[in-house]
Image 1 (cartoon, rainbow, N blue to C red):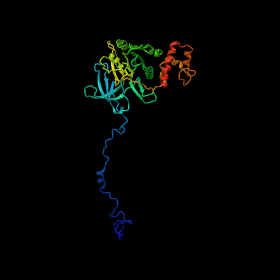
Image 2 (tube, one colour):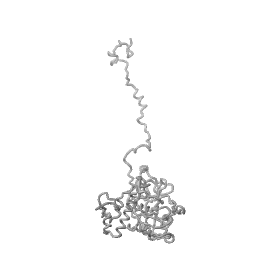
Image 3 (cartoon, rainbow, N blue to C red):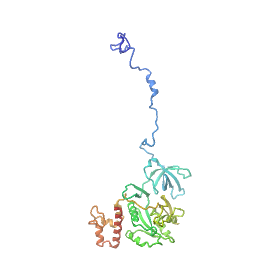
Image 4 (spheres, helix red, strand yellow):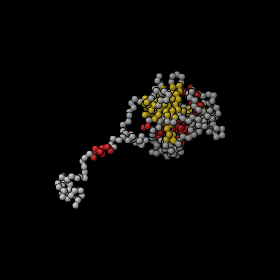
Length: 372
């Protein structure tokens, strides 16, 4: 009879279970099988990571200590026109792309960015933006007042020139109010320029802003105060905003010869302007005495959402009223129907005079604009 080991039950030298040290058969052989299995070892295979789906291989990113700082002049379909070595003999414009790690970070006109790569500016070259420097101001807007998604208009501007027409199209007080709210929220100083004053008297419109102390320029087709406006813009980064058709691009072309910003006309039926400027761009303005500033021309808009604005920023712009507001009850809206409002009481008692009454009216109109 043959047992499970394939040897006779009386096989010589085997243990009682047939697997003793003297057994000639075994279920495991320590021979050359390991060497044969080594031929199928896949530990040395290197798989290429998916660049779109994998996390960075390390959290330590390059410091780019050799990066150069540049000004963003304009953006066009993923390509950025930047200015390197500003105000030096080596000043040059360079085309750049955004590094992949910045794909979620918006880069806008007026930004200061760090760039690496080919920064010669020669035709066909492309630099790479690797970092956005800290911003001093940020002008933002939303699609409407209920939309919390903000759209960055421009960065690092310290002045805003609001251009409005006295007629054709008719001036829109509420739209100017919205520009003012956005400017105060961003910490930008606003100015007002009324064009086409040969078509209508601008004074009734300007009376709405008498309490704000805004610098105001008036312009007509045959008399544009270029020197006066340029003097206010030199030494600053000024964003120019306005309704379509008010003559904003015409003004920019007059201030910056060679700008060649597209201009349009107003529809005689609807009274609406046509969008002509399609992109935001920085243009250098000079005063002829060796001084210069930057004019940032923006496309004309018909609405300006304020869903991102903090109302506290509006009050802070009225420093005299803000000091009185410290005596207001918590949560005071400072509107005409606000109970126990210290500002309303000061005006009613005549402590602020007529100028204070006008400023309160302007503040309340801006707060009402935001509330809507």
